Amino acid sequence: MSEGVEWGLHCCVTLAWLGDEEPVPAARLAERFQLPPAYLNKCLQALGRAGILTSTPGARGGFRLARAPERITLLDLVTAIEGPEEAFRCTEIRQRCAEANPASREFLRPCAIAAAMHKAELAWRKELAAQTLADLSAAAPRSARDAALRWFGRGEND
Image (tube, rainbow, N blue to C red; front, side, top):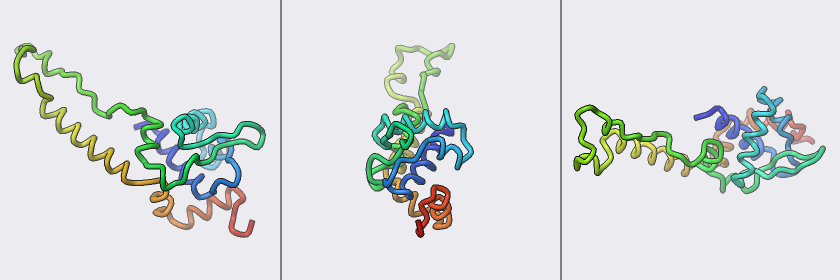
């Protein structure tokens, strides 16, 4: 999994804490997390194409969540960054063995390795689909939320 998933998750949790008052520039998010702005912007744009974020152009533009954090699953975020492909891709190398007969009935079904990896992938995706951005936001320490609000000038006294 690419580091873009981590970046996207942290940025989306931050945007959930900030609410939708005003958009947050990608450069400001990059500065907070000390990330390369151009690469982070590509990640945020992918989240925008997936309908997770909306972007506002211009000097006062930036990103905000496109829907409520309760309606954004971790699977949504991972798929937006990584794509819908499965992590394990079986290329059927067992059929290339010197002694293999590709016409054999044993090749009609996936091998035990592919079946086990597929089962694990389904469990992983099910778990990601069961957790939302709201869950992550709530599980984070309050001090992290408060620090983010202060960083973006949106503290409780602002």
